[in-house]
View 1 (cartoon, rainbow, N blue to C red):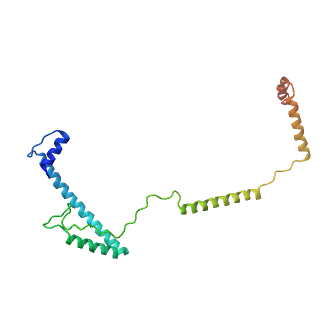
View 2 (cartoon, rainbow, N blue to C red):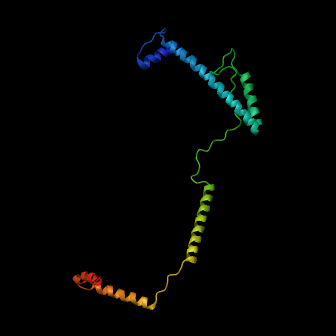
View 3 (cartoon, rainbow, N blue to C red):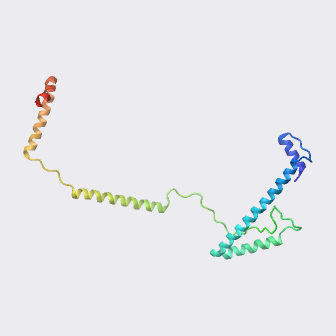
Length: 185
């Protein structure tokens, strides 16, 4: 922790001058220690999870690629590690980067609006709907009773009624208004 750099940064941002013996530096050191401990714990957890994942991959059939990558990573970690107990990049002692299990396939982020499977299902549903409609119409045609035919007398009565309706429209409005009352008597 460079205290001079922190002092100048605080002065640039806030305009407040702090001394080297200011208690704020004790808080910065405490924060740094807590952060380092937290990072070490998280790195250890991530490492344990990645080792468990690599073991599951080996059990699932990817043993050759994972074992080869794991061997390479442990070899690099033991031979390329910095000397004198330095962990480099803030990693805890014994940290071994998780090996890659081969080339990583990109994850598809875009999918077509309608997939071929959905098209097949849509076509099947449309076919079933069309067949159902044809069955319903065929059933109605087969079981519908034809309208009863009118006798000759009924047809003549309907024709006379049409003629009377036309004749009523030609009458005087007063006489037309009086007719319904006279017919009900």
